[in-house]
Length: 182
Image 1 (cartoon, rainbow, N blue to C red):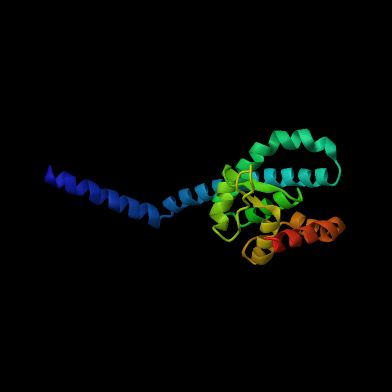
Image 2: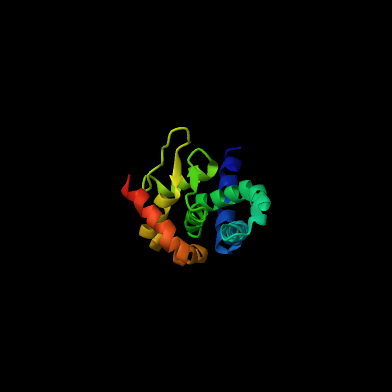
């Protein structure tokens, strides 16, 4: 009995060492990594599609409202997953989500707000207004993005939005006033 108790763990250790040296364990790990990457890419494609529709709505395509409302929960869930996975593409998309709404916000009590908090830590102030839940405000997030964009992957739609005449003449000056008043 003692002999078997010793041989089985030893044999298991040799088997694991053999599998690792043969690359079989690594293949399984690479397959799992590939599956996670594909899942992230699908989530990102959905998030990007949603944000592109939001941008079109902001430019006047009001017929997009029912679809935006219907997809909001799935969008928030997928963006939260990307943020929690520390996907470097996600923060710019979260910032764009609030800025495309001009004065959008992400309530801290929501799963998306919690995911943002894990990324931002205490780098971004939380807006606390009477009769409203604590939230991340668009102007704080846009300032944070402007200061930290080198740490993450850019989102071309956010860059395009920031260069639009309406944004430069109306939104960004409003953000500057709001930041200065706090």
